[in-house]
Image 1 (cartoon, rainbow, N blue to C red):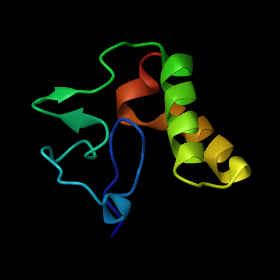
Image 2: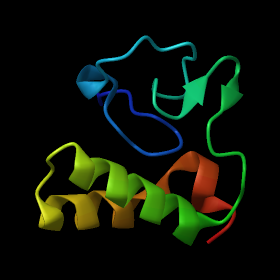
Image 3: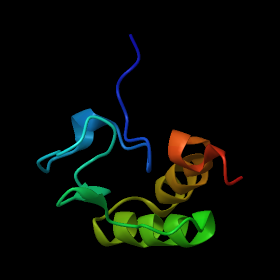
Length: 80
């Protein structure tokens, strides 16, 4: 069975170290009952995620690939 992932950023739930409040979203995307990024600008969201991944020590190539893949997340499919 495929691993469950955040429907906004595609982070695997197994990698989520925070306290998840939603069955659909990771702890970084959804807090206090709402999405942390409420906009619908995919490129802006990708930039935010890339910068967050880099600040947490992710390899630049991996961060680029992961943020590229966000366009295929259920939340963003309709905006591409």
